[in-house]
Image (cartoon, rainbow, N blue to C red; front, side, top):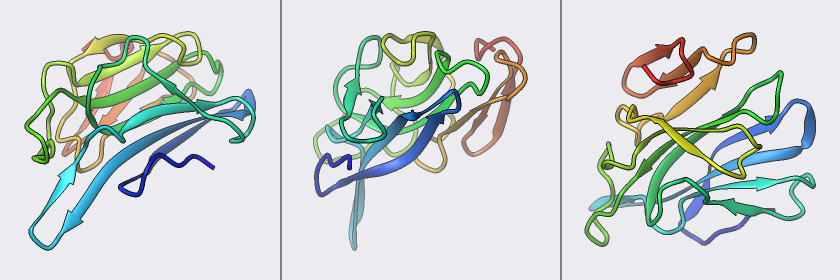
Length: 160
């Protein structure tokens, strides 16, 4: 079982269809109170297991450093090496939360090696605290769907 801390839970989970023991878990630090909320922090991150959840490793190479907010993740069904992550990131004042949008490091990231390394392909991340979902067309690795407060579709691997 993946446990980060008492303020963090899984917000998205994706399985490699070619290897069901490989899972990607997007963890989201979020605490709502009667007076506000904290939507992001050091607990947020992207993790992978290759043994069905016995052990987990945080994926960091090429992803934004520092505190993150909400993250969405998906694996291409025909090739488990191709993974996309929609990441809300960038520093903000302590305890203030992200408030929906993040900063310059927020955006769509792609890995072609099962999450070992990542490259940023787009700044797109519309209102991430609400949905922050990314899905890859099961038949076309270049057709990417991003859901925020609106639905966006890309036919060039998320670049536009």
